Image (tube, rainbow, N blue to C red; front, side, top):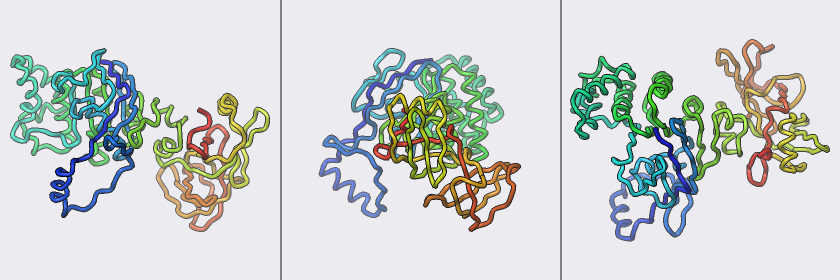
Length: 394
């Protein structure tokens, strides 16, 4: 149990010296060139994490999410002590731990690749850290068996990792972490090596586990489904910067900018070149000849920010669109039957658009090339600035 504070945390990877560059170049001469990520480069070096500020409450489950190379795993490794902090303060339970060794931070980490000792049994893997701390044998046995029962791996205690499936190995890795009863549990994409069915099962297991142990969780993933289902709050990152912090519902309903709007939600939000018109205290959005008034809540926020009429990027989620006999005209490209709903992939206003229609509400089938129309309500329209991509409501 612990509070964790990250105050203006920064991570800079210094440039390699000339001599080291030659060695590295020689070593990697035959390797294909890796794609460069869009990170800031300064005189100090490459900035991987910048201006990271976050207060994590005791027993809170925080998820860091974002595309590859955004700095989420680097941030986690700085909390763990596996990466040196270039600037700022990391505070655990009121104590600055920047210069404290990883073993003395009272944290545990679960890695993507399990990191189990292949020559040890499941029991020995889980007991290893306790043996190093010279915990009495009977207490070790009690803690290992309690953790094994929580994770439903008691029957595998005498097996070695090679005899287990991927999901079972990940449970062992989690069990090895929780036997220590750490103040903070760090998890770095622990489910990414599992197939879809196992990922769903393990997500449910982590939710159950969270209810049974009194620990603060920091979880890293690039999978927004994991972020939305697991996190009390989500931290969305891009190019080393925090884009938005909020509950899953907050970031879904009120995305701070275009990046968050496009990253959170599946299928992704539809975007259009639209027009925002202010008429007194009322606001209207228009696209493709379809005009709708925004709801009172949105209008109040726009009034508070003194927003004026302007061209905008209009965002509407696929599940918030309605097939209609009027509205925005669209040409059908593909119709996908998804069971409970149909996903219509259409072209409208020069953009690729997805419309989700509940199967029971489908009045007709659509084929490639058909023309149809769709509408949306003023309560689900998001307006973003053309200048800085920010949500004009906030």
